[in-house]
Length: 199
Image 1 (cartoon, rainbow, N blue to C red):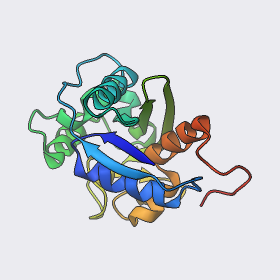
Image 2 (image 1 turned 135 degrees about the vertical axis):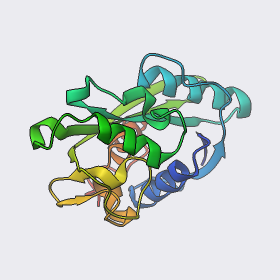
Image 3 (image 1 turned 30 degrees about the horizontal axis):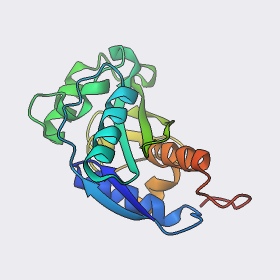
């Protein structure tokens, strides 16, 4: 089965292909990345993902998967949130991290609570389905690790005691927000074998 992935981010393509490789799919899914042309200008993650999925389907005629993801920091009223990828205005992860760390008011763990959120959307011309995935953690004072991308080097996943940049991609995909959203979406679609434990 062919599935268009509406994203221009090669890191997301890599992660989603890896996620699909560990899900108990009823049949193989071939991913076809297509870069959406629209801006992520809507006021919610869901609306941004929905626009990209609709555009991907219009351009290709194939069922399309899209997602919108961000880092939400409690003490900063949800920032960087929708603007996670362009928080510093440069589009560079290092600059985004530096700006975020400069805004945190202290070192207490209570002040450093954060979560990644992902909204995944599927559009095929007849159905428009969506699912949400969230993973909670804390922000470190400085980056650790070389894996992952975006804010992964400062996002500490407490159950492992490591950042998402300190663990292999296969580990991250067991617990990540993106994995959870796609898994829930594919369950709605009936694309997963029932009664099988997920890795």
